Each structure stands twice: as structure tokens, then as C-alpha cells.
Image (cartoon, rainbow, N blue to C red):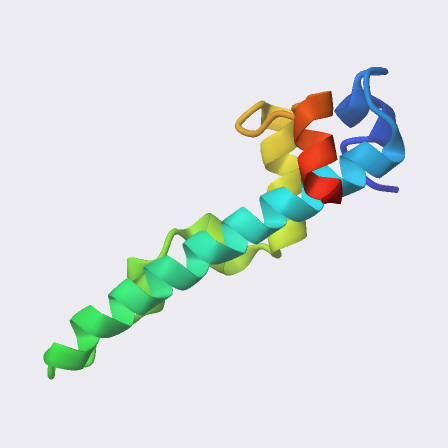
Length: 95
């Protein structure tokens, strides 16, 4: 069973499709942040001969958990929220 449940995540306001899209977008943001932190850590370690660890320089939540699980947890905690697109934005996306 998935925790938190779909009903808890949607709070009766959104359907499963909207939840899936929001989760995918959050996962993309989380992955981009992980890649940014990893690139910064590699850049720092490239100049060092200390043999430090890249993993020690990256946020542990980003490194240890999968992006989708992080996204679900972020939606559940309220760090990210689902925002419905306005009609004007939707018509721009279709063009």
C-alpha cells in the first residue's frame, strides 16, 4: 500500500491525473536539484586532491530516496502544492 494515500494527497480537490502530473513535475524539480548539487560537488572535488566524498556534499534526502518518493513526500508535507492552470495558460499550452 502506498503511503500517503491518493485520497490524502488530493484532499478531494484534484483527480488522479492532476496528482500524477504534479508528482512528475515535482520529481523533475527534485532531480534537477540533485544534478545541480552533484555538479557543484564534482567541481569542488576536481580541484581537490583530498579524495573527499561527493555523497557527503549532496543533501541526503536527494541522494538516498528516489525522486518520485521525494515528490510525494513534498506534496504531502506542503512543500509543493498543486496549482490549477488558468484558462489563459491552458490555451497558450495548446498553441
